[in-house]
Image (cartoon, rainbow, N blue to C red):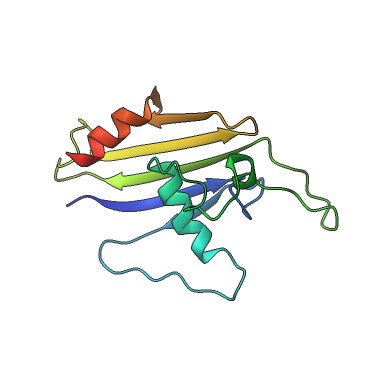
Length: 134
């Protein structure tokens, strides 16, 4: 059965300009940390990358609120876009793609436009949902 191997976040919510990589193992994985450290934002990022359209479900007012706002105090600029990459292990071939690793990504720009990719190739949200539903 396919499982998520890695989630990469850049400019998504409280994750700034550096790319944050969260590696997950097969089986049970727990994400821990203090309040406000971004644990729930990791789950939001996975939902975002896999096609969630409701910004309310992602705990944001609109798509622009998903993009890192920067911090004057820390000297961090606003991000121009948010990008999340979810990497699946597909060694059993249950995801109908001819690779053992399947990468699904989504980026959103400040104007609200989203771009979806499957293994780096630009595709539609509908196609992502079709592939995942198989």
